[in-house]
Length: 344
Image (cartoon, rainbow, N blue to C red):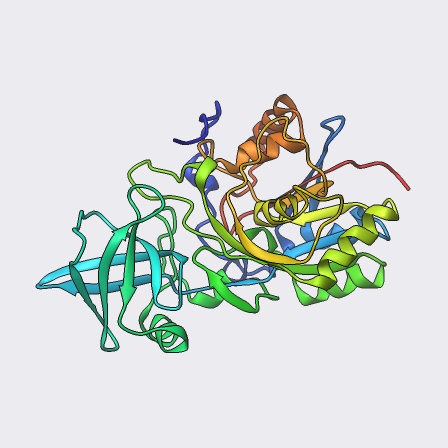
């Protein structure tokens, strides 16, 4: 199952294949389209101007999950096998995608670093399987970092270093794909925002695979991801709501975590766990007022979430505008801020 594809196509020329740093600009010089949640009004900026768009008392919530080198190459006999990590289950077991092959329970894959992996069952959904590794904990992560490579999709032509797939504030390893909505932040911009009285808080949601290849996407109604909301972040979110500030999620991952944490309570409570939450049109957002995100493909379930923030006609008009004015798509691309733009 996947989201219904929207009626637009992204030309190959607008796929951002190169990080900003390799295009000769800093991260925070990405372009920024703002969208008024209420009126659909569109305006165009650069990301480093974010401090002039947000207000004192607003709260930005960022996902500080750090991206793992999630692609491992191994052997089964003489056959080369590519494993893509998706989700950590235990210190020793991971849900993974084995690219292009069907394997049976009990089969063993030999990996670098004297590591072996045995298929022990089916994953949460087809085509994922569960691997049990011969090492666990930090020893297993050590092999990932020594021999693994960052995950990248077909629109990327160059194997960029892992650092290019990290936000500047990433600190807790666990994502297999970069929580890319925060990539355009620089420390300089974060400091400017703080100086203006815009608060910043962190949580973790470890992003799993968003694409399984061969036109297969995760089932958005059953896509499990681990998250953790610290006490300090929960308090800042609740305080911002009381003070009539705006809670702005940096990325769809942050929306999922915060809206999961408030489902059965009046306030966001500090917690860690797993979320299956699927946010789509007419979902009653209880915590998050605004969303800072990249531009998404027509098939992506992320667009369903954006429809919970803004009328889909406004959203599609904005995407047409982004296409006609050359905004760049994907993790190295430009940014979109959807927010009620009331003046203070």
